[in-house]
Image (tube, rainbow, N blue to C red; front, side, top):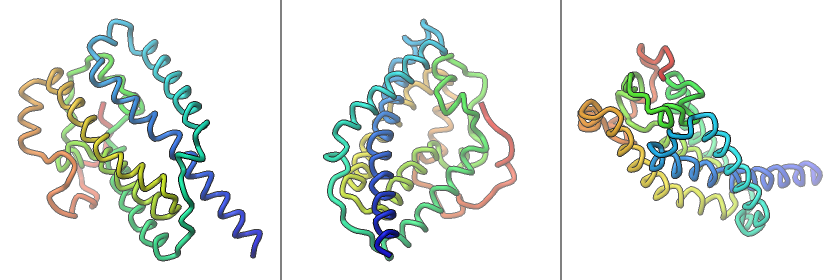
Length: 213
């Protein structure tokens, strides 16, 4: 029994370290791409993505040096919190699955921004109900990890994600307006940013099939 408890404690700590060294660089990725996309297009998508990947790795390595501080205090494993976390995680997975049906890897990496593509405005499926479902999935997912793993650093990470995502959304929408103009302004006026109007957004829809840009 002690061996199992020790193994689970090690897994919880390892997952905590993984979160605190990968989530901030992921936020940094978009904090760089969105405001600098017009300037970065001069270098091309592939060189920029190569440089961004190097920045991601270097940032993660740097954060790893402070992992003990970033992970924070172990609050212990609590079955009740874990159960709530599992439910919250299931919701985040549902949002993510609906979102991924409309996204290709190139979109997840930021290629459309770096290439200045404006042929297709993604407004189908879950994007007809929420403008930024990926960020909703991230917020819910971070909360679920904090509840299931229960380290103080993950709670701080989840709270810190709120202003981080608010900034990224503002930067992204400015860039989208630049690419799509009035079409995006009309879309923004009709569809909420992150919080859906009702829980029906979790249900599979007919237009969930097919990938977007």
